[in-house]
Length: 423
Image (cartoon, rainbow, N blue to C red):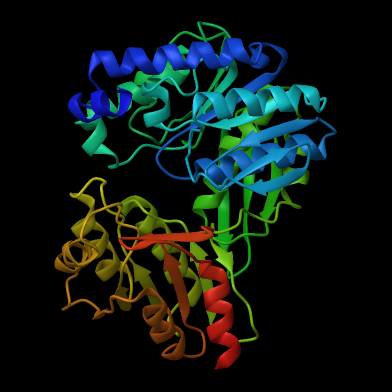
């Protein structure tokens, strides 16, 4: 019955949204509204949410705060991390509320929760009573669901309205949504990014294994930040994490000190090292903006001597407009582009691949279309030379690969290691 109604009603039909709200309050009531006993930090944004959630959880743990975290890639309870097998950015309301209750039972006092725009609209994260609401950035993504960038921004704003005029907003002044979210009521706002923000970075550098910068506060205090993960864009994620951590009472020096020990998130610019003389990373980049940031980071790493090589793809049953954009971005910023299959959720995977391929400007790069993902990875690895950098985008830390014929075991990191060992 419910399944039949779902097929008849559009995703954003008022009746469907009402159903989501009913499920959410029922779930919270069933588990005793556990978020009331926690200090909840909610993180939204197009890219960087999972890494930022991981950074915040790491900072809090390093400062003896018992914390749990829920994100696309992992769930964490008081320092113990496990895979999020659902791969959902925002868990179902029953799963989330059960998880929050488990945090309370384990003695946790804080929770960091990744909140997607879908989850916010569908009330999956309702009744979490966030005290801190932070955003990484907004970019072209999920318009198949939201309809327009304006609506996408409004849907992201749900998180800040959940503060109810209390708590702390942590906003990126470099993002075009800043002025919109700035005016939503809260007790305090911490800003980061721009020259007039509460937190900004200068003197940023990155290499194949790390990134560094000086963090400067509005009051003029300076702290040197070093991350054991590459990509200057991760320094931006770190600023958001520092702002959110400061909002719950962690001094900036303690935040920076803690982040020096942050080893990254599985499948987020994760380095694969089997002794080869070139760099290999597995990354969960899926949006055009994420591809661009990742490829620019690799370009900085290789300098004039190496080539940037990318495995690109796009999942099915999602925003079709971004597929050729992913191809265009890759041809703009990479030297060698290999387009391949991805999880297509019922769509013809060959048709999805063709749409990515259509966006690739073959006059700007060496381009190859290799449908089988393993074969495509093998091609890249076997054609890399000294000082080259390869990034395998799209699958990240997933442990399965959903194809038309069904789900198969798949770990992109293990596939890359296996091929490298055989070379």
